[in-house]
Amino acid sequence: MTSANAILAYEPFIRLSAFFGVFAIMTGWELAAPRRTLTVSKPLRWFSNLGLVGINTIVARLVLPLGPVAFAGLCANNGWGVLNLQDWPLWLEIIAAIVFLDFAIWLQHVMVHAVPILWRLHRLHHADLDYDVTTGARFHPLEILLSLAIKFAVIALIGASPVAVLLFEIILNAMAMFNHANVRLPLNIDAGLRVLLVTPDFHRVHHSVLPHETNSNFGFNLSLWDRLFGTYQAQPEGGHEGMTIGLDMFRDPVEERLDKLITQPFRAPIGTGGYAINRRDWPTHSDKP
Ligand SMILES: [Zn+2]
Ligand SMILES: [Zn+2]
Image (cartoon, rainbow, N blue to C red; front, top):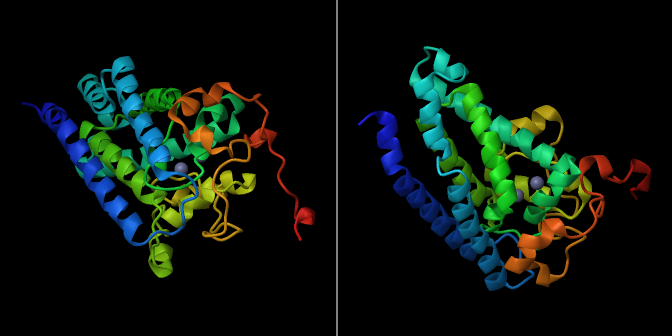
């Protein structure tokens, strides 16, 4: 058995163990030390958000039976991609691939905020009226397919190895649950961690109802990209407990129903809400008190 085949054989077990392990830890942490009081029915939101996880898993498997890790193996066998043409040590290739993949999904995240038709898909993630561990998995199936297509293109371009892609998927999944969790992290620990990583307080700013806060802190894993490209906002203006989570255009809790989530991208005129970056109406400094 080659190393790529060995990774593929254990991939479902490794990924599921990591998912349920981190989910259990974050859920317990949310109960023990919550950051905010939730505002809408938790069973309703959890049913919808976790229902999307089930739908997305099935849709992704049906449309692209070959997952990203197997695709990385295909690229390696054919010598596709920059890293497959280099003779670097494996550890260096893994780090380079993970950092580049993280940059690519940061750029993709900026793009889905900037292009109105893509914002239609992505705004589902932002329409959650609360912010907890399940928000991190709340994406429309069409956005999941778009993300997969982009991920495949990036893997082929850089020649990421199967082990790098598997590690990236596990890290991204775990970090999405960590940084969406409704947990209270001591401020000094948050300050230390966010020098390098995206923390719950860092990403919560991105779920603010205020457009200039929604359009900041696009990072998932490394906090570097927002600092480097000028989209970093340290804290929400309303404070973490006082800020409003969600979007102005979807405030009715009935919008949290699973069927409403699926149809949400196809409702409301495209310019409504003024959120996409090129349609926004940001406050000017003179508007502020
Ligand atoms: Zn976003
Ligand atoms: Zn988010």
